[in-house]
Amino acid sequence: MKVRATMNETETNEPEDTRVPDAAATLHPFHIAYLPYLFDKKISHIECGPVTCWNFKVEAGSRVASAQHRERMAAILRENTRAGKPIEDIWILSTSGKECYELSDRDETVISETRLLLFLSFLAQSNISAGNNAGMCMVTSENFSLIHNTFDLSRGRGSYVGGGIVRVTSGGRTTSYEAPLYVIPAPMAQLDCELLKRLLLLRNRRPRLFRRVVRAAHALLNGYYNSPEVSDDTRILSLARAFEILLDLPEKQPRKHFKALIGRYSSGVKHRTYSYMSARGPARVKEQGTRPVIWADRFYMLRNKIIHGDALRDADYRYHRQSHVYVATWFFLLALKSLLNEQWRQPAFHDRIPWKRGQFKYDAISGRFEALIRKSTRRRR
Image 1: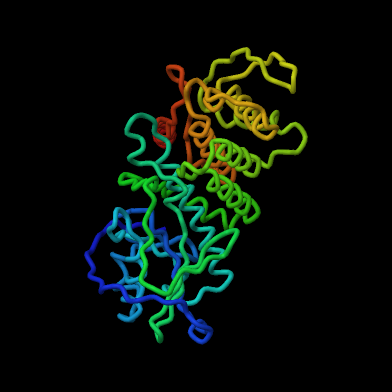
Image 2 (image 1 turned 180 degrees about the horizontal axis):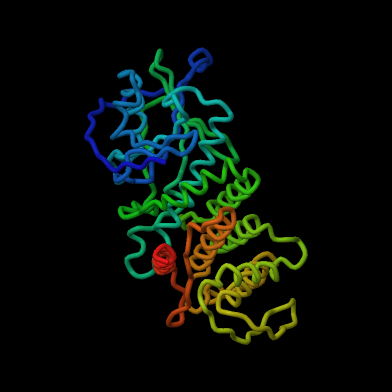
């Protein structure tokens, strides 16, 4: 996988008028798929198997041979604005040799998969911090909004197509699509290149597990929107569904298996064992477990209460003052990396989630450092 962080300035012409294409104009439309809200200036392009993700501002001159094509694409991308100004550094997702040509069903499938792999890889590097300034590097689902746009050069026409329940086509005039205020600019967001590499390898080596990971990522994406219109209940249920898919939880006693797997994947840290009360319907049962296991019990209990329509308090959405959404995301990433480690002889990830000063912390550094020391010691022997 190639990742370069070089930046070049490119000039683009003024946007052309866009109108809804008639039947004749849509016989051979050009098509572009892009992520308008990722706001990443550091990376010029990433090779993701059959899909290339590239920064239009940086690489349009070398990737799109036709000046007419470049001008039309630039006009379309300038319609995406933030605070009234065109968004720069928009990422294009294209299959090999199809930077702005009509996509097949297979092309659209692998592009959608790549979007989910990018979501996981940015999440794993950017959303593991806590504190007052953590939002400076975080990403949410809005940053991975995938836009499909078609246009026809012969008539100078183009249209935007979207909508999940009702299909909406926008065109007929020069328009702008303003980014909502809750879309995070994420100036310090980073990509976990090793995770992306392993996910791409998984596609070929373990296709069944890869499809499971993609489905789990899609469930997580559905509940990870920053929009105030997405409720905490939706976020919790989406995260619970993501766990159920990723961990392949059985229909019988899923909470028991969920707790066991979270405890297993947290074994890289020595956690103290506590006694706690676990709800079983109206009854409560005394059990013992580590902090990760107790969290898993509380998280699944919250999931059940939401499904059954129980009345909930704000405190129910937190575990020791930490948001269940934050903690669940961390354990999802830990479980994902643990599953990937099981596919190779040499583990690539050594992440941990220790319990320190009454809170969970995500630690992606110390375990990796200790693994390097152990490897160096074995070589000396």
